[in-house]
Length: 321
Image (cartoon, rainbow, N blue to C red; front, side):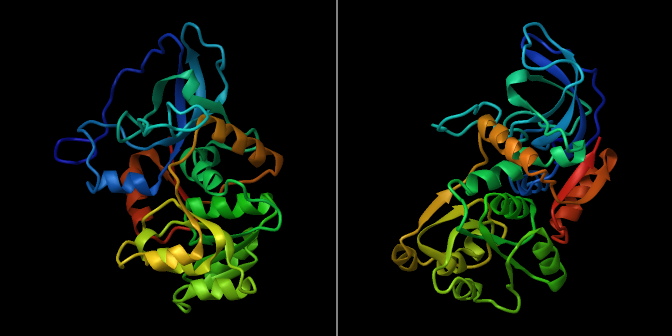
């Protein structure tokens, strides 16, 4: 990024991997909501920072001491590059904000920050996994057969949550704004879909669909604009997993209502490399395939961001390198 905030294509020599590093030829990267905030200046990043946090590619060279990968291996990056497993005690350094991201042809990177791709996926599919899929995985912690999960909309995290919850044997209720999207959500496994345009009090409707019990886990992507309805929809002692803030134009939550719900509000910030590896095993076992709305060529990366910003997408927006 230039000092004026303008994105520029820059040619640099292909990096050489150092000790413990591999050289990845990037084949695809994917956009998340956080990228939009940084690309349009809503969240400042240092001049010259390479954007985007998620990618998939092939190992083209290995440096001294590398033991986890060999030339030709297909890999994806871990979203949290320094969180390998266990509890995270403090915020980590992230791609795009703190270190260079993946919108590049080649990246030299520590081998510990990568994991193998699920074998049945192609590069555009695998590039969607590091942030959105692992965030959904973390949001669903503890979900199993007989549970009810509510997901909001049709963005990447919500669709991954739908697929992973169904793989875990849970029932899924989804919200959306159109009948066309509702049909696609049902095809993915949603048992019930609520149109929040027609039913503004969708929390009460979700509770009605569960015979008054409510949803055990709610994957909250709207933030202040939807949290009140999530509180209305959550089961007593259930969990609201807060993963996004895409609807921020209303007053937010009533603390008294939240107290009466007995629920837990969890802030989700992706997951560790171990989480990514565990999730990939489930994706492989169930042959799950990420939902991709559209793939843009590398030179149209800004067009991809503008398209995602429009909100018309259903699933992930990917950039092919």
